[in-house]
Image 1 (tube, rainbow, N blue to C red):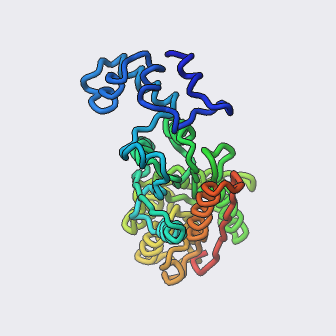
Image 2 (cartoon, helix red, strand yellow):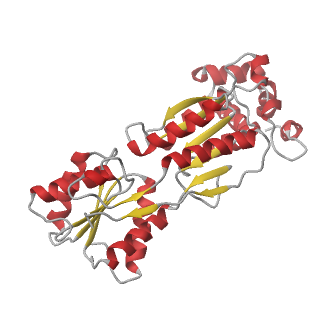
Image 3 (cartoon, rainbow, N blue to C red):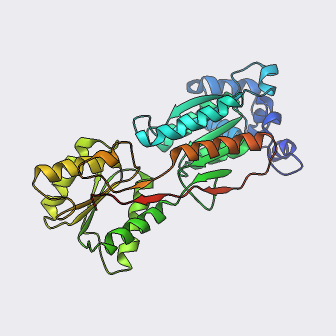
Length: 345
């Protein structure tokens, strides 16, 4: 690597300037010609592996982003904000998308929606494509990203908001809540009501896993261990809830409570329990997560954790707009949650 060339790209503050990182700059840092860089970015199969690796490393170090727009347009605002979700099939994210879109649209921005399918490598590809469009801001779901994604976002020097989580090391700004605290709150709720043989039914989602860790820690402080754990493949479905309870009871027939990672799973658990003649909550308590629109209308009404997705969306959008306008924005915004007790516990 040509470190002298790399130093010339740095601004007075020591960060790389996206507007100053050109294809020629990447070529100088990689020690190859601009034509080779262009070929590596557009036809990588024609470039020798060691050369391709040098170009890719130089792209990462310089923060260079290929623009799909003309030179004059690339220097102007795109009026575009990208929002990356794990899935549109998960109802819990709908309120966030709606609120964020309304706020951004009212301010003259359009929303570009991307779906990562809960896969970090898909998010990485999405972010690369998104940055090539020169967005004015990026809203992500969660705080778990590949190192490449984090480096690219930080080098791009556009406002970034991570949502639905809290972490001590955000990429830029964060709007969300503590999943571990949700787990602690559920543990307190069940223990106060005398439940001791508690099982977990969850989908394979890192945020659900952190809630489970909080739940287990909260139970452990009172000498209670989780009686059984069943992790199902994504996405959450009603059928998985029914199948999940059947699997849990096969291993631990005397369960007295099931904690579900979503209201959709919990609805399936309620239905399976009733089909088996298990009275809820006298024989088996059930609690979900999300407070979806059906949760208060199940039989019995479902206890759950309410998260205000619309508030998360509005605050994330406003953080982007404020940062664009040069206003100070806190690194962390805790939107909190509420445990809603209903008939199922």
